[in-house]
Length: 164
Picture (tube, rainbow, N blue to C red):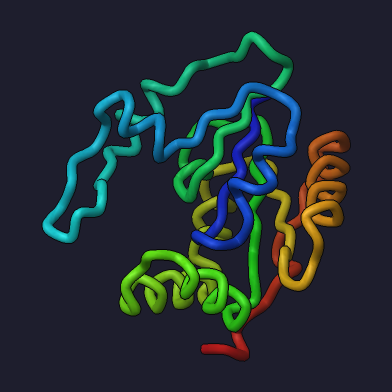
């Protein structure tokens, strides 16, 4: 099964993906390794989603192929997990990274407006939304594993509109 783990940066994608069983592809590393995308004037990589879609393996040697990254929801998936985080906690998480203040703000605004969830719902048949705020890795991992196992569809359970 091809599983996408997506969400705004800082929501826990890498942490959760590392714990799941299956072959893992970190999309950022994969794009760099395969020479996909071009750097813009800000040093950020701009990716042609169709080119990325065409270059991703169709299947894995293992039961699951885990595609992790904030663009995973644009790929052809069997199951899409969208991780979410309260904007205030997300600010704390992102501030610990080497992000500019404008990049932190851009990602917080994206989370407030449900941008990745909206895109996932438009592009995927099954979307499973999980709030990672104030939850342990084990709690989130258990919820994600149960969602994958049952192929549960759950979206619209997180609402950050009070922060807009």
